[in-house]
Length: 219
Length: 216
Length: 191
Image 1 (cartoon, chains in turn purple, green, cyan):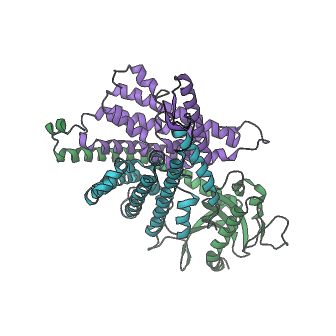
Image 2 (tube, helix red, strand yellow; image 1 turned 180 degrees about the vertical axis):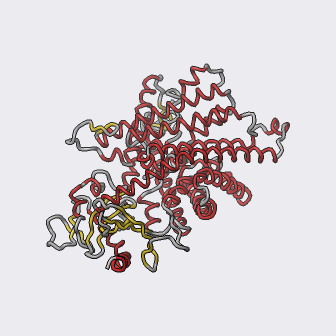
Image 3 (cartoon, one colour; image 1 turned 120 degrees about the horizontal axis):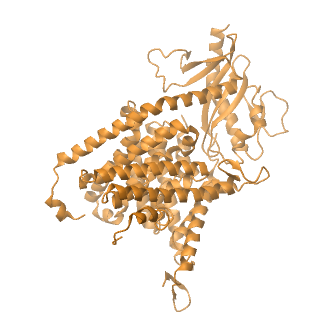
């Protein structure tokens, strides 16, 4: 990003254009693990949002004080503190969801999205813009989580947020809430996004070997 | 990493360590504060869940005692040498008249997918299982998780005589220890049954001798 | 305490860290294009996992008894330092291997499988021996998933894949297939 971006852009780009999961393909572990119900997705999204916002603001505030050599360790320490706090609060306020999310709340610490934003943005920009960037990225992550969560819960349990949609006669597509379903759903979403991107972009010419086999590279 | 520019403002090591030290201390302090707020609530919930499970499998006892399992037998207090947090324990429920109702015992072993953790009620004198509740499981939704969702399976355990014997529904011979397994979830149901049997193998002698000594 | 054989087999195939527990996905998606690289990554992971398991046991037994809420911070600090030390050791002992692994070594720090192992081990209350079997099983499982994915992808390079599907979409679908296949291991060594 060479051109200075506006504050509005800071907020909005994380939501769709540079969506951390669907475009940058970061944070896949929690994305697949907790999206078997919408409630879990929501809780994970909020927890990550809190950690992202808190640590971005703190890193941006302290960026002149943190020496360059130990910056990664400092970021990780800050992130781990916020994650521990989020973990305790969730355990105290919504213990069932906390149990369902299990170790993945603690694993927010190694979510590449958060460390990536500190390194790429918060450590170089003023607090206000870092906060906006964090909010946008967090919202984008939440959006992706809810999308997957809704898809998997509706098909895999026939419900949304625990409310049965199709009545007791619905035979749930159980694989959707199991691990393979997570992989397949995300794969399908990425294929769908790739298809819509390809439709909008000019078609690249596929180079072929003389005997008609595609080389494996487009354009 | 532009080493040239960094070398110009060489940061002394003590400053690096000091920064990390201060950061670490601040982090620790913050966590301790939140912990202080959260801990009582977490503990309260944990106790409530345990009590709910004990009540469920023992049929609403008036109160219960925690007994620690040692090689010598069951002991009431953690007198010197017993670490309360790691020692195995059982719970003895009493009715309103002060008579023992039965033991509530937790157990965990691998099921079909991962560990199954359950609690069951057991009356030592008659060898009768009073009830069973699965606390944690990762069984296949719709199939294995029927060990939780199928009310008739859970009811099978009430009044069954230990050691339990898993049988296919309809194939039983009327033995008091028989428990009908779930069609389509054989391994999960068999796991529940063998978890209880394995647990009682070790504990039954201790339980019987405790009851005989305390309430002859 | 649970059977050691079950701990190993469960971590390796029944509840494979990548295909069932969704840990270690970053290297799984990024490194799995070549079997040779996948093997090396798997070996590096296994090494770090075993050391992490021992360190986590040590921390839990002797230090964190007094401050359980500092567990996460302690774990991540230890893991980050461990990876740093391993990186320096490999650089000194085998520069060729260091060059081969390249960027993957520091990335092991953010590999959720390492921290995940420490957390699971703590939650399940494993002792030293159980933790080791758990780490070995997990490492084998991670390597297995990586190598399987790499061999499939290497084969598919020669296939006529539509341009739409090339990239992460296809890798995830393949992963879904592998995950489905691994579900067949359920029930192994159960009670």
